Length: 215
Ligand code: ZN
Image (cartoon, rainbow, N blue to C red; front, top):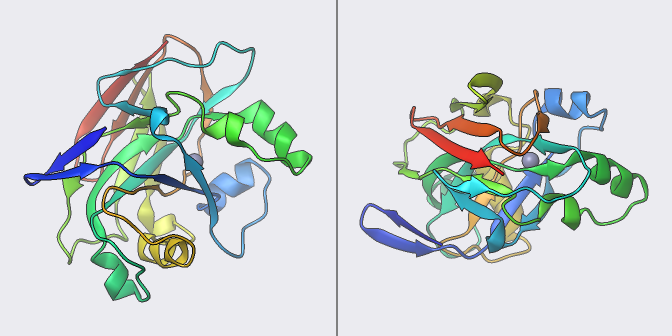
């Protein structure tokens, strides 16, 4: 999948995701506040562009929506300061980190990897990116998610435990960031179940609305 932003083309490279980045969401899942960012990845086959259909796994399971701000990385390197890290952010949008919650809880309780529950096909519906300027206010990004026309999650990046520059500095310790990398930044409270046939909608910080159908 390619992203075109201000006449620049980005081939999506990797999808980094952050778990447990909002205190109230951690509380609703009865988890502990992490001391450092919880990082996992999704494959490119997780992505569903705005307007597309997210075909859910044909399993008897509880699939949750998680509405999240997503950042597009536009620069190669390893940022070491907040001001440096800000320069890596080329665009911002919203997306969903779909999660098989019951299986995730089971795997986590055994200390096992949770890939099956986070990285399945169509698990990452993604909106269209809007470019951000270097002075863009990353600490007051308001966003929301809706299911079948009802707003189910409302978030503000001000409530993130680790803000986006901090996350990029942390990721850079392990991976050289590449233009085209994506970062899902974690979900606020209000996660809940999805069933095939539900319509999903997300509102990005700049007010754009994106829709997907599940199947
Ligand atoms: Zn998530």
